[in-house]
Amino acid sequence: MESTFQKISRKTGKKPSSCKCQLCKSQCRTPCLPTPEDVQWLTDAGYADRLMITDWGAGIMMGVYQKVITMIAPRKEANGYCTFYRDGLCELHDKRLKPTEGKLSHHTTSRTNFDPKRSLAWNVAKEWLQLSEYQVHEMLEFAQSSMVNAITTTHALDFEAAPWEYDPIQFTRFRIGTCEGIWAVTDDSYDIVTVVNNQPGNAHLQDVFEWFEYACRRDGKSLRVLELLNDQFKAHLINKRGFTDIGNNNLEKRMDNGQKEIKEEAPAGSAYGGDGSEV
Ligand code: SF4
Image 1: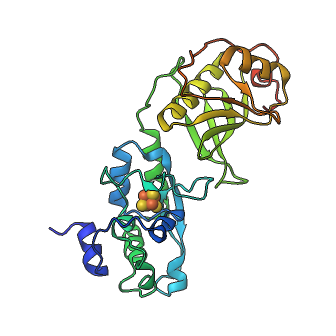
Image 2 (image 1 turned 120 degrees about the vertical axis):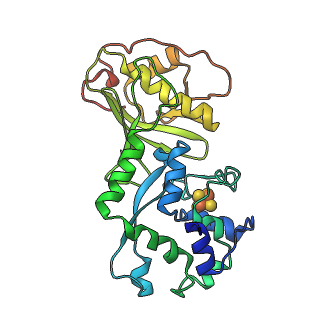
Image 3 (image 1 turned 45 degrees about the vertical axis):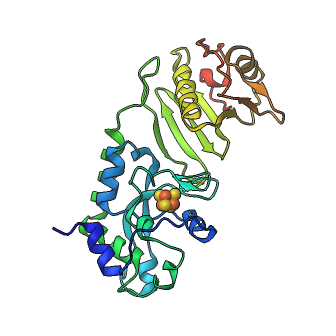
């Protein structure tokens, strides 16, 4: 039986390609479109937290569909590229998990993209019409909630994330136990922009650092806490958690020097102790 991938390949006349030219790389500024099947594979492989809901509206411009199509696709990061684009390559390529549009796309593809019959994007987007908008949201919610935690933190707390409503491309909200905050990612670092503990004294901040430090080690990035105006918290991070002052009220901890992790509760009254102020 013909698979969805084979059907799209046949209809568009496109074959898998792995061109590494600059034009092809620049296509990764817009995350490629997966089919629902691709999303299932990405979810099974543990990537649900790097996917997001997106509304595909190019069909309206092309005159092939009158409404936006709600689907799930890789997140776009603050550096302007797809979340799976690393050092000029697709992280998913060798794992054979690249979404269908990415597998079949080539820098010459854009010439045929506005021919509805052969358009790769439209043929992939069409696959999402079998699901209602509600079902697409349910699908992502279920995938993210059933993710097995990659680490078990001190209090066995989950890392919950959602786009920050005021700037969903650049910033993401997180909740870990009773701690909440906003973070961003750059090529070199994970940046904690704000963090507050709503129930001071329960040491959930420890879990926050365990989660972020795990992600930094996994992705070869440093951890930064930005625009830190609370002197007590600043001293704690420098003296107890191995951060260094990099100027302009920003602190950084490099994760490649084998620094010992320190477990120590935050001093009472600090920003993350839950007095309502932000880091
Ligand atoms: S999933 Fe891979 S091929 Fe597709 S846009 Fe992202 S980095 Fe590029």
